[in-house]
Every structure is written in structure tokens, then in C-alpha cells.
Image 1 (cartoon, rainbow over the protein chains, first blue to last red):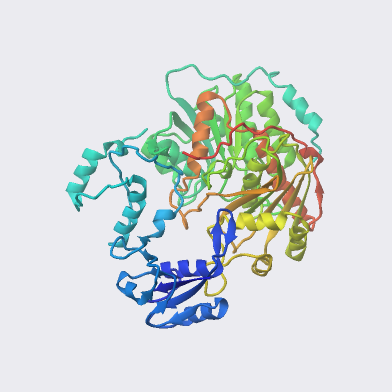
Image 2: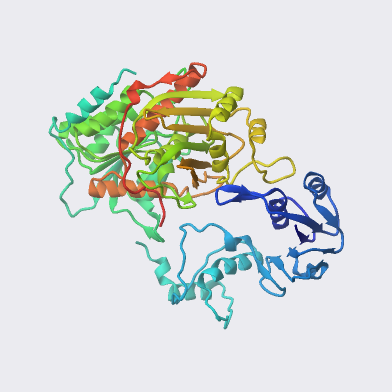
Length: 184
Length: 419
């Protein structure tokens, strides 16, 4: 059975670490049925609290305060990545886009699309626009996580990132994305 | 409840006798519609339709301005938070003092190309069964009288179920057949997004349907029936009508659910499409099983529909357990399931954009004269709503429904939102 190590600064309800950890320990709805991953879970946080104790009692979650060994790590603060000892170098870093081995991203990447569009491979996309709300840096991360899976091409690289504000932003929007403003 | 299928068919065959059948207007001017509404306040159904007609709405990735023009309104109630008068002033849309004057735009003959009857919300009396007596039937008959007096009929959209009395519901449908005008009615549920996008092929081997929803009796139960019926009607042979209805609460409900060979499995499959499942203490979510469902749903109500051809539909209202509308059906040995996406304002949405596909279908019907799906669906779901209420009123006894032997074929493609 695979052992997963969850590493976070704290464990609270309605946080990404709680949402993901609970899915691994109790299961989750997937493609119209409930699925339970076959794994053991170790949680690494500096402090233990009632929510962690509840999961230790209900689902056999193991807790460590500093570091743990496992087959893969789910990291909720990239600065803590060194606290998982994984011989396979498999990790998911929640929220960060770079700086660790393995995959990284937010829940935006895998959520439902309305409508359920798919952009065919090799489509020559000229422009992409994503609209989000929220606070820096989470909003920016989620925006890129929403956009990049749709527009990414093999070998593509980011040439430049420019932050625009106020009038400059509206000028660029009008110049480059006028089609998005027109009505049908 | 003495309406028979023979009478219903006879009413249908009499179509055209009155000589005022639907004729599309021949004009280069935008087609005109009127809204007949109980109340126009924020989040009332009529507000969603009025604002979409006046301001447009997002459609297929663009902001769409309807090709039909709101030419007038009749509004029955004006509470302190009324918006009808503000919209009337801002957009120059007159509010008329009667249904007849709205339809004639103050003249002597029918002067519009479509009618929207939005008889939902507002303060109306309830009867001893707890049904709210909205004036949908009364207004429909006033509209029909204008049609007859004018020698011309135009498409009608009736929001939600037709009426609280079966004979009135059947008479409304019969009037539409007699005068040959397109008649569309019902809920947003059959036309909203599906998660995942799920088309069930017409003529499939569907064996049983289960829908799970929440809300009040004589209110959201109608949405739950529409959630199931827009799928059930696609089974091989088409819809055959409803033979009986029975409602259950408490222990009797769960006993009945568990008696079904596949019903518990379909209930869990529907819940696997929910985004709002209740969690145990200390959890944001819990994997449901029958023990947890029973424990946390002391006020659950279930409605069991026996169709004429033996098909079975179960509709469960699990208040406090979920806040969405989900469906599961057994096609052969395979389960098909989805959520019909209706995030309720203001908690989950501000725009209530599930009204957009409904508005778009109304617009299309007015422009083309084609209703997107048979009004017989809404006739049956109206009848399910009435019979379910009746069963509860009669202490959860079985209600035989010979008057609901209404057969029809589903459209080739479902009319739900997918682009």
C-alpha cells in the first residue's frame, strides 16, 4: 500500500490540505461513483489539533511534527518540501508553479469546464484571456492554472510577463481583446 | 380528477375549429412579447425574464440581446422592493392595468407575438393541502380569450407547473392544441448545464430513474420531477403516462427505497454527482451510505411514480443534506448520472444563469413557432406535483392517476445547455 505524506503549516477545515487529505482517507465522488484510494496517510504539521486527532481516530491518519517517510508527498508550502523523504521523488505541490520536483498546481486545473470545451492539440491559438478575482498571489496562480492547460504547446516558453494597471490594462484589453467585448 | 385520455385526445383533435390558429406575424419589426407576472422584485422569477429581455444575457460566449422586444407588462403585485416600475421607466416599457390590455398593448386586438406567464413568487393564498394558488390558469384563460377575440394566437410560455388542479392543467394544454399555438412550460432544470454534459439517447433501454433535490412541497418538488422526467421520457417506446403516485416520509420512505432492487444504488449514484453533500461533525463532506442518509434526513420526503408501462421514477427531497439537483438512471445494467446545475441565488450565484437557456428557448419559440419540447412533459410533471401533494394530504396513501395516461415522444435531442 502506498504511503502519502501531507506537509502543511497547519491543518484547518476548508483549506486545500484538509480537502485533499480527506479525499485520500475517506474517498470522494469520481465519475458518478465513490472511489477510495488504497493508501496510508501521514500528516506533517508543526502542531497537532482536534481536527487532526479526529482523523487519526476515525481513519488511522498518522501525524508527525517534523518530517516523515513515504512514497509520495503532497506539499502545501513549498518551503516545507524537504520534510518528506521520498525515494521516488513524487510530489504534488499545491499552489506553487515551480521550485519543486513533481507536479504542482491548484484545484482550478482539474475542475469542470462550462461548457466542456477542449482545444485540440496543435491548434494555433493567437490569444487567450482569463478573468479571475481574489488576492495576490492566489488569484494569479489560479488564473495561470486555468489558462495554461488550455493553451500550452510542446516546447512553449513564456517570453515576457507584464503587469498592467488601470488605464494601461483597459487600453490593452480594448486593443487585443475587442472581440471579447462585442455582443452577439 | 375526471379528465380522461379520450377527452384529452378529443380536445386535441378539435384543434383549428375556432379558426384562430397560430400565425407568425409578417413584419420587419422585432417581434413583440409581453410578460404577465405576479411580482417583479430581485430574484423573483419574473425579474430574471424581464431583465434578460431588456438587458440581454450571456449566451454561447457572447452577450446576447434578444431578437424579441418586451413591449409591455402586466404585474399583479407591487411590494416595497418592486422593480417593475423602475424597469418600466428606464426602458420605456408600459405596465398595463389588465392582462387583456397588455396583450392588446392598449388597443382592441392582440398586438404581440408571444406571451410569457410568470406566475411564481408574490403573496398568494394557500389551500388546505398547502398549494399556493398562483393565478397561472386564470391568466392563461384570459390570454386565450384575447386570442379567440382577435382571431389569432401566438406562442405562450408558462413558467413552472401549469396549475394546482389537473383539469385546469389539461384544459390549458387542450386549448393550445385547439387553437394550434406553440405552448412551452416548465422549469429551468431540463435546459440548464449538466455536469457532466450528458445526453441520453432517445429510445434507450432506461429501466428506472431517481432524482434527488431539496426545497418545499408544491414548489421545488416540481423541479425534482422535471429533473427526472426530461431523462425518463427518452426511454424506448417514449413516455406512456403515469399510473399512480405515492409519497412517503420517515421510516416508510426508507423502507420503500430499500425495497427497490436498484433504487438505493441509483440514490447513491445521484448523490455522487452532488456538490453540496453534508459532512459529519468535523468534516466538510462525508461519503454517503444508507445509514448516514437515514440518520441525517429525518424530514426527507420521497415520491414514487409508477408509469403506465411499468417504468419507475423516484424523486427524493433531502432538505439539509444537499442543496442541488442530481439524477441517476439505469440504462440496461449501466448507471448514467449527472447534476443539473441550478446554483440558487443569492447563496451560490448572483445571475441565476440557468434562466438564460429557458429565455433563449422562449425567444426561439416566438421567432420560429417551434416549442423545444412537448408541453405534455410539463402536463405530466404538473400532475406528478399535484398527485404527490395529494398523497401527502391523504396520509401517504397511493393515488391512482387514470387521468395522467398522457403519452408522448421526447424530442430527438435534449434541449439542455451545452455550448
